[in-house]
Amino acid sequence: MPTLSCLFKYTTLFTVIVYIKHMARIKQLIDPDGKFSIDDLCKLSALPVRTVRYYIQMGVLDKPLGEKRGAHYVQRHVDQLLRIRALSEAGVSLEAIKGVLRGDAPPVASKPAAPGTVVVRSHVLLGPGIELSISPAEASLTPEQLRALISAMTDVYKSIKE
Image (cartoon, rainbow, N blue to C red):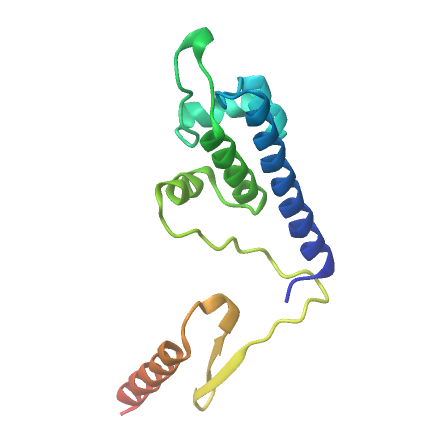
């Protein structure tokens, strides 16, 4: 269960992303070509130019369209930067972010539970002194898959015991 401060942080981040996308669309209305300079891109994403150039160098962000002084960015670059920023602030590595932008499944950033956080787990007794602890929220398993896992673990225990 997320804490109130965690919910506030992600709600605020979501609000900022919506606002930035809105501002990018306004900029496109003003500039009918929908082109952004690197300065515009940095203002919209609230990232320094050096960071944006680093993301391009590392292959996390697509290269600009055009070359040298004619280089420009489009809405796709703004969307990529916002996604990169959100994942980065969630604690995801740049390598994993690259994978997400290529279409891989987004990784679940594991954050240690803060003191006072309530954690719900299912405890399955496999045998005397052997217990399987499952966090349904983190396991990402359907109920059928969870039942199959428990059944398989029980069978493995019985086969070892015999």
